[in-house]
Length: 403
Image 1 (spheres, one colour):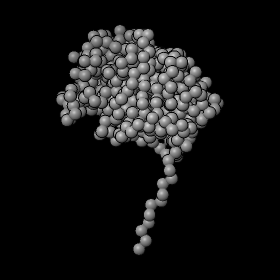
Image 2 (spheres, one colour; image 1 turned 135 degrees about the horizontal axis):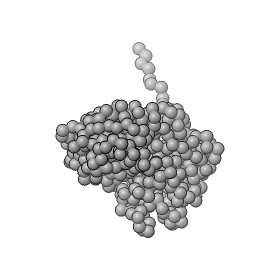
Image 3 (tube, rainbow, N blue to C red; image 1 turned 120 degrees about the horizontal axis):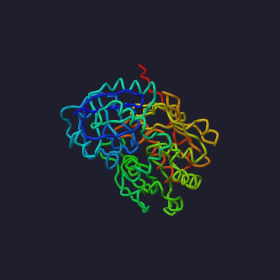
Image 4 (cartoon, rainbow, N blue to C red; image 1 turned 180 degrees about the horizontal axis):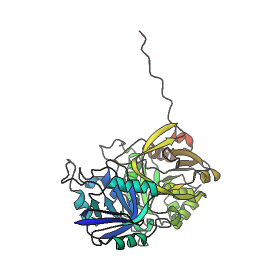
């Protein structure tokens, strides 16, 4: 079946559909990961976006239930260069087209994804429409131009709770306990030894692997909806609060930012991705929209505290202004080596740690997985949140053979 992708600037890509039939709008972004496509389309942070993969062959190892990052898929469309005829992997329990059909996601293949990616890099992320129903170019471009803008969009209210048994559409703010650790084959798997730390997680579209990392670090993990008031979080007596990932414009999530602001200084806080941005806003810093965002598993980040480069996985279209963080008393700890944007900060006086990248990245890389473990250990043992938390012991010089 023929399908089309139209950009608001008038460019049209025509290819073959796979997955569901229909029409969907969203912001078009590109992801540079070579593997992990299943984790991409089950990441709630992609809500409202049409994702194109830069790696040409996608779907070759199928899908399986163990690698989900939420209950389903929230993205608006999935675009690839080449779709294999059939998947081949011992863990595969289904094909990519079958998964997309099951979750009502439109797929498009057999287009020039390099040309699309290049256009997005040069001109920035744009609104678009993907359709198997509407094939008139003029009408498609009009629909793309009428699609909602990502700037100003509160998409947390659309996805928060999709990963758990918490429903944002009800008044129920009952907490949910999380007990699943990392799988035994994971490179970051710990022994889940209890460290007596209790971490409450604000679910803004949380990924399963963040919760698994906390459990494997020995934490008791309680997940609450993003709309949970500060008083109810205090009643849970947490040793630490983790504000997780999610989609959309951080400035639009007013209620959650207000909750974080009320809790800052009362409990150690760890922000990841959208949580990094909202925590910065709660401190009084500012955010801005990136030209085309950071989406993929190969983003180089400098850990200034350790003078160490870490390859990270990222998925965000907004960033925190570094100067504004320093103005409110924060210390810049991480910088993106591609565009010098802020990737992390610590506010020692307020006991806040935040990173823009995903330290829990699945399938990887795992360079920064230690950040979650160290936060968990710190809050469990009453250790202060400071820059020492991100440092590494000096490496002894290699022994030299004398003979």
